[in-house]
Image (cartoon, rainbow, N blue to C red; front, side):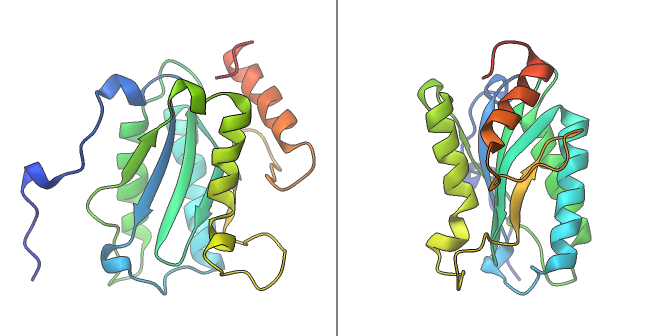
Length: 185
């Protein structure tokens, strides 16, 4: 039986304000003991549905996500001052854990990287999104050049939204601009 970690063993977090409003955060959520065997088309659909509800509920968009055999990457961007990614991540993880098959659970805490100002510039932001989307390719999980089937994007009210399609970023920023005004990020 695994002992629970003392509170001081938790990953450090920035102040709550760093995760609120128009913040951009790259979240990594790993299965306990790096467990594999849970990822399939049906569970991908469950995660996409949870992601859609999370984005709507907490005023977010997810321009890139990638589910890997033992973890997931999610790039989230706040759409208004009400956005709170720490609350969103807690809700998403709680509900994801509830839908995992017995024997599977997420690690106690997600890893996050709050993007700095230079990482939020459009070119740099797209590079980070591409890093997320191409995770399976870097891991050698693809046999051909087709996109990983467990990667995508979620933007409430915008469908279809395919990050590998031509014109994706133009469409993403146009929709983002409709939600937040002229300022992009």
